[in-house]
Amino acid sequence: PHPVLRGANAEIIQFDEALAKLAAEMFAVMYAADGVGLAAPQVGLARRLFVYNVDPRAPLRQMRETAVINPRIVDYCRRSSEEPLNAWSDVE
Image (cartoon, one colour):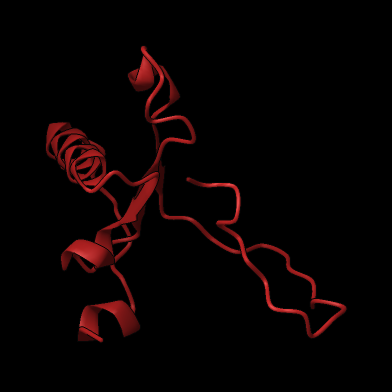
């Protein structure tokens, strides 16, 4: 894998037009790939940002667009079984 996928990503500290433009470009890339989510490291940017849309085919899809900036894991639990997790089974 590309090193940016494994490395630490930079915290975003400026919330400006450049960030809005970056998020818009990421949505365009995501839609072109027929995806539902895209993280900045997936496009070679070591930044703490991802975008998603749970219903990208909806007529007013922009209303469901979400950009997540500087996400943090604040809690987690261990899985109780060894059964493989298939998080994308409902996406067609």
